[in-house]
Image (tube, one colour):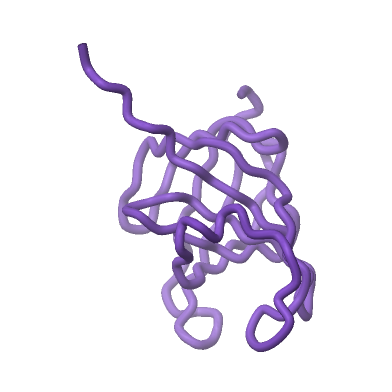
Length: 134
C-alpha cells in the first residue's frame, strides 16, 4: 500500500500596503513561491491578471495575518483565500496547478511573459483560470 503524500498548501494574502494588492503563494520545495497580483485573483475563466514574481517566503508565513509596521511591505495583511493545491506541470515559464480553496477552485496557470521587466529584476507572469469547474 502506497503512502499518500501530504497536500501542498497555497494562500492568497490581501495586502494593503502603499497600494492594495494580493500575494499568491504556492508551497514548493520547503518554501512559499510568491507572486504579487495587483488586482484580485481571477475567480472565473477569461479573467487574466498580471502577477509579478517576488521573493520566496517561509512556510510559516502562510498563516500570517496582521500589521507590518515598517519597511518594505508596510501595511495590513490578511488571508483572502487558502487551501490545498496540486501542481500538474511546473516548468520554466509555465506552471499549471489545481487550487482547492474557498474562493479559488479549479485549474489555473501562471505563464511567464518576460524576464526582468518590472524594475529591480522582477519577472512578469500572466495568472488565469483554465476552466470554471472545481
